[in-house]
Image (cartoon, rainbow, N blue to C red; front, side):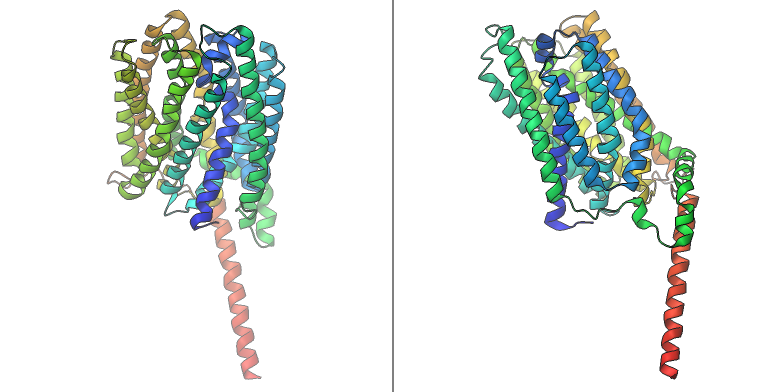
Length: 467
């Protein structure tokens, strides 16, 4: 565990790492989506297929990833993920076919999920502890927002030297811009891998670290299965997963603002990327404020209010006519939508504390919740691809965002059910603590061993005094 300034530094470096890691599968298809379409000759439906592949492979690895995060050092897992992603960036420079893109997206999903994600969440939760998890996850979201916004703006400014304007740019110039972007990302991946090796402490807790005594070692082989089965019996786990589904769907919906800027407001691809950086910037403060508010006024209560804000913001985008002469309207809509969505992202994993989950089970629980929670990676690309290709221009985006307003309302209802389940709405709740039977046995054995040792020490002291 780390404290004070060092904890803030660790969270900030982890935020840098995750933004660099996910810039390839997510950033390319969001902030730089128009450039990706024009450079690689893809359409919205094909990009949706890449997202679906990423989601399906991720779903297969979330559960194993949680187990891996509980038993292996986070530093080793995170560094391995960054270096593998750097190698993928280098291969993308060669201009792969669509089939090769599918394989690369599958590899990125396996690496990001099996090695990185659960280890990342586990470290953040350890840093925050039980009392300050909201602030820790809020600062993580704030750091990610600031890093992502600055990174997008820097890359867009660099690309502006190659692409002075969309109409003036040739296909060759756009290809050079994409190559420049991928090389920059590959270098950043390697730099962050070495930074993580230096900054992140080696002694972050794993589940194996909490085990002591021969009795516990004998049970280690069967613990993984009992942990999974125990978590599956908890209604709060399933409700938490559905909360993440609704919240993450809203997160993914922000990726399409660059397309709306290009095809609805007639902006060039670099300007659209610059506008999309506003999405990242809103994350820099909304997650931090939401995390602090969650610690003060209740995690479930804040989450309910934020889902209502999320639904209202996307309704505004969907129902307001697009006017190319008023780009400020788009910026206001982006700000409202992104603020509500990323505020939820700053608190939804703090709900683990409302469900009274032991810290050493964080990796397994995050893996379980993520299997369901991040399934929007599978279907959101297909849903958006249908609307955007069927209704070209701004109308397709408005239909899509009207659908997202409904998702936000569903998220509010599920969060309300979760709050009732864990007893955060004045009742006792029907979902028991997530402390599993095997872990209670573990704690009991450990306490017994400690007690026995204390008795032996006491007896020894008495004997020595008598002598």
